[in-house]
Length: 193
Image (cartoon, rainbow, N blue to C red):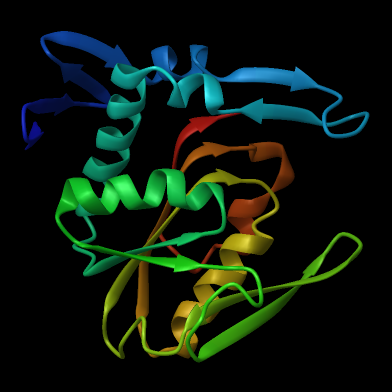
């Protein structure tokens, strides 16, 4: 059993104010919208989880409990929904948070990583001085699908000389095989579809 503040954890069950919240309870708070943003896509909408304070708190604390096992020095979250989970996990652990952004959004000197998408490429950037060689980094995001964004984020972190010790996310779309792309990293997902 681990403890963060007044939150207790036993085997993927979280107690908040004496009430048990399980991973199944969390899954019930995610709205599934078929054919969004285009036909054939089954969109997992986390806004319904985020708007319930106790459920959101439970999700963050369950993620924080997993991430702390890897003793990170700092949390990195990719734009944009990685901020919604990564920053509160960093806060729960009492460590810093570094945003990874799309090109042109950071004001200081940056380094970048370009990666392949299904149709074309995309690029992520981080401030050149945001991470330091040897720092232990946990990447936190909302979703693992094909693994492209996460892998690019990990490569970007490694360009700074920092070490990725864990990737944790709220949701994993298992059938899309993103975990295979991340086979060299400790990968955790709270909820699987």
